[in-house]
Length: 80
Image (cartoon, rainbow, N blue to C red; front, side):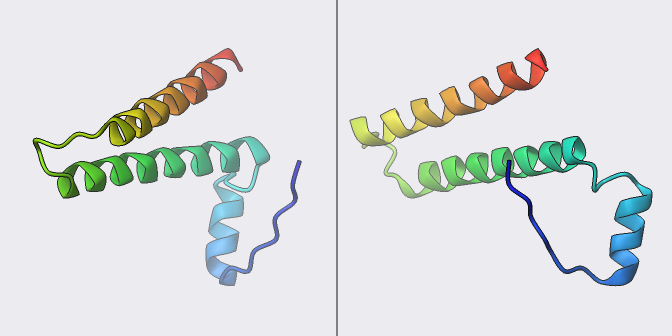
């Protein structure tokens, strides 16, 4: 496990604490959700920048790997 220390404005920290957002399980869920959103955004950017007729084996493999990672995260989350 890793301990993370961050600095936040007092009011935001108090609101987050009151909402239970500083609980380890909640923070983990928030971070995983954000990582998924960013992975999807990266895929969309990759797709938008790649010529439609040139889906290279490397790009296809990267997409397959990202999909596998997201599915593995979902399985792990559902198992807990």
